[in-house]
Image (cartoon, rainbow, N blue to C red; front, side):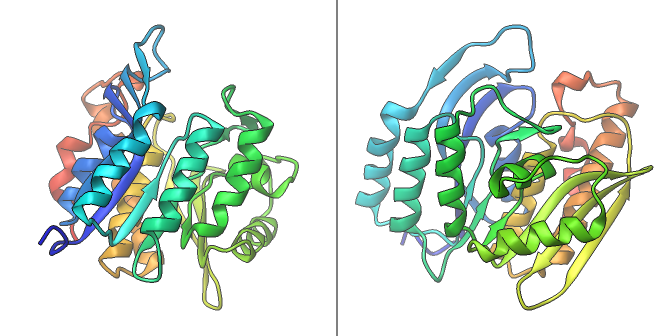
Length: 275
């Protein structure tokens, strides 16, 4: 009886303030009529972009938490991963994907590893190597350009040409994922997402750049893509929907003078998000 509704297992950190990770993804996945089941990797009072924050590592509790899901006989229509804070967490996620993934489960991996050409300070060479191994479990992969370069061992170039991005997307797909979207590439006054489907179409989806980068937009993006995949929405349609929704979120946040640290006020436009 626990498995009568579509469910996504969401593996990410929980942040109380700042609109990112689980706090953003859970309501969005729910709005798209999919049950969201969070598996926390850590708990933070507010995200790390603030001057101070309280942090609790959830790694010691993760396997026991999963044990209880196993006892309940839970199965998932989708699995979505976000920021992973250690090599051990990546190993736990790998084991989870091997047990709870499969042909009837859509796995979306957002390899949250870095931005603007630089890996995050917490990401060690060992973690980068393990994340490369995790990619093969993905049905859908959603890296930004920095993360795509790290995964492929390529040099980052912010002025990269479209044909090169397509090469990267194809190369990442060859590692396992059927669908790849390389996100957030600036092209003049536009932000472009490069979508590749193995054996299918290649699309570049652009939206006008509004304001500056805000925390949580990547989490919004992956949540929509994951829920849409479970709901059998075509990939390019889903990426277009996510891009448009994020633009509305940013525009509303600017109108309400929401501080950049506070993310996007997605609550104001959540009712516009449709299955």
